[in-house]
Image (tube, rainbow, N blue to C red; front, side):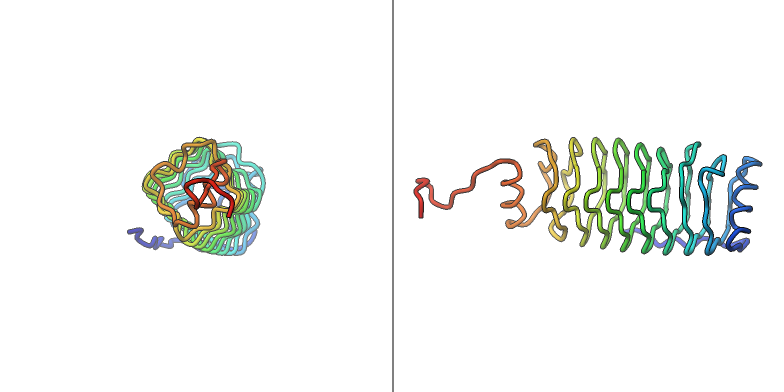
Length: 222
């Protein structure tokens, strides 16, 4: 079971002060530790690095492309806007995203362990060539997400929409998808081997894979 993260706040900052604080840590090559950051528009392009530990971000907006590989550890993002942000190659360990907007967020080639996303809008999220372990997606909109050649170990999806998601060469063995929407997902063939689905989902998925289902064993028309 995923244990809730409770960062120990050492310093609080809001708005432009929060951005200056992050920029100062990045310039000094220091980890931003124990910060509570609120209501800040954080331009990733202006930061040489992003290294957060034991932090909490509330109502913040992250935009642009980060040149260095970001690292978030023991950190919570709540009601934040990460739409279109580029966090390619991110290292995420014990991170929670709560009610965040992450449409088009780039997390390709990311390494994630014990990460939880709850009630987040993650349409067109990019997790290509990533490795995620012991992660939870709960009540998230992942429609159109690109999850190609991704390794998922101990990952769960509960009440999520994966409609139109691209899952090419991403094994889903052992993952329970019975509460999720799977309409129109893109597969190359073997990804669903060992996944748990309902009989209705199985029928729909069979059609996606080009399987013809006949109730009459003789194949006669009704």
